[in-house]
Image: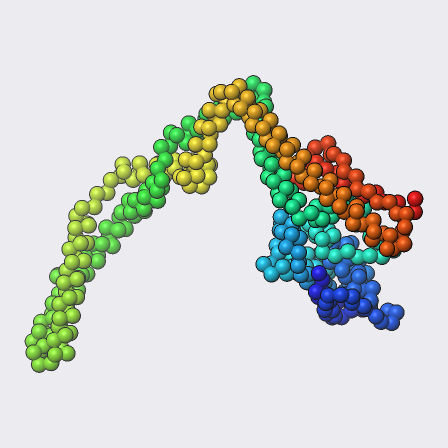
Length: 417
């Protein structure tokens, strides 16, 4: 249900907001007051052609409509179409237009005109002289029959799942349908790529580990130079340790006079001990540092190889190893092509049979729903004084099934036979 319409900067309309409630809403006004702008705005919002003559120079036209989807089935159907629907059933469409651009958003997400036109019949129907041909669309006629029986939704979901499985099996079978030359070419390519990954002997986390090691080895001179200076500055030969020792002697001579000074002395002892430990660690690091040029060259070459492989096969060691597994599976299939083809053909046949069964069950349910729909509609036509009206739902079969089954639903009506 349309709950609110907001139009801004469109022809004579500067800024108007119209709320709609349940029941009948009548818009009245003098000729030229802007009543037709409401319909024009709604038509453009729902994917209609943008009439540039209604746009204002230098200003952006904005048309916004809020819909409340009270039917959970409708909300679910729109969600399946990729339409973002809020949990409370609110759907807001906004179209902004200028002389050189047009953008439509649905609950904040950009949508194409094609997408909006597909969902428009579910949101609003604009009636006028020869303007409305929606009921002639066979997809909508099928949807009406489906909506007349709530149990059809579940059968349609099963059919869609069967169709997806069928397409997957068909794709797998067609992938195996190649000539010997193509199969040999693919086998050589997969063998080369699998061998390349296998030869790299990748291990998860190795790149990170070697990168850290390379950073140390390639900066060895700078590290040793800096540590040497730091060791001197923190040592006992005119370094920080000497100064802290002098400070500690002064504090020790006066610590007995004031507990606060004694606390400072104890803190300075901790500083001296900590500095001594750090100075000793630096000396040990310098003494044990092994500047191995061969190791540096090996790490550099190994990193180059790892990065070349992972950049080519997914961006990480895990992705490259996953690619190796997939390629080995494909090679296995190619090596036993005949058996794989027979297996794929059997799977395709099974999935096709499952789809046929699902389509048949869905078609039977539709035919029962169509009978009830006919029986319910004819009295309504008679109430409109079409006493001899004849209405019939014809259900035929498409050449190929789809996610909605294989039915072609068409309405036939004679109001005055």
